[in-house]
Length: 485
Image (cartoon, rainbow, N blue to C red):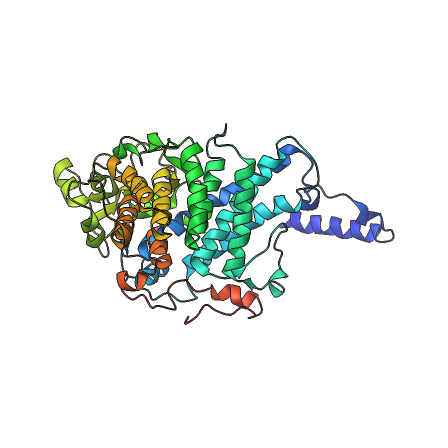
């Protein structure tokens, strides 16, 4: 305490002595000023890494894309374990929901980091500038697309940071206008990037084209979907992995089927006080087998449990079933493993994204799994293109060709249907091929099937999630809540 008092006296005397002049206000700060940051190409690359970093927080988006659908239930330890996830599972969520608040905040943090680069895009010139800007614009588009999927109309700001106080001036933008900006960003990215990149995990031309195709599909712009995805399929370096059984293993990441993959690592620790700070895939620990002992897998918190309904969706002898969904009772019997059951235990786990043995187990080990998220796979590209050709009346022959590329890999009989029957076949294939990957809820919503497939889904309400109430209050209550919340 004595040292603190003496220091205070010294500081007070210094201020008193210097207060007779203005020299003390001219002392340069030793801290980096954000307005003066961009002076070298390395500065832009550093800022770009910061914009990439928020991709790792999209693990929650992926989980809720399954739990909100009829693919999985919330699970966990009890009915009150992460209450926000439980409410979304039951279609009883409200504007007071920590997980929705996280998604809103984390996606806007990513947008702000991308916008920081764009705000200073003209400050200096350097050889790789267009590639940096293209990656920043892809990331901004990615984050805005996530926000539109979850919340519909959202505040749109481009090429400048959103600073505190701006919320009193910025309105929610119609999602059609947000989509327009997303398209512009992705077209720019596709035109300024190559199909290959030296550094694994960086955005490529193929990633921009694939996401652009998905954005078009969400708006039923079927001609545009077909055009951009045809080019990607024809010109890109991607293909389906031959052995589906290996596709989600940690030693087969960034493979030929991965068009865009979110990179995770287990080299840094993490804690529940800052989940978005983890460099690991938090969802993998949440999805893991409760109190598991045995080979291959590690333990976890038993969230996001596949339903009997999605298990039964697979056709007989579909080799994808045991890769996508782990029947824990059969596994335990065959391998001598033990486990405990949690809330809503279905007997199944999302095998694509549960913890594997062999990582560093950095604490907290359930938050630091290194399993990458395959955000856009080439199988998804084929199925999006098939849907566009079929639903857009552009040619069922081509639609079947694309669909059957995916089915042949799974050793499934070829589809010969046309028209509405072909549409149903494509919907079925998207569900079984992409189960556990976070797409199904949004597929059901965009195709108008959610009310008939999801228990508790209310048409005119649950197509989007509520805007977090804290954000509405921060706007001075200027933003209207989504309907019926």
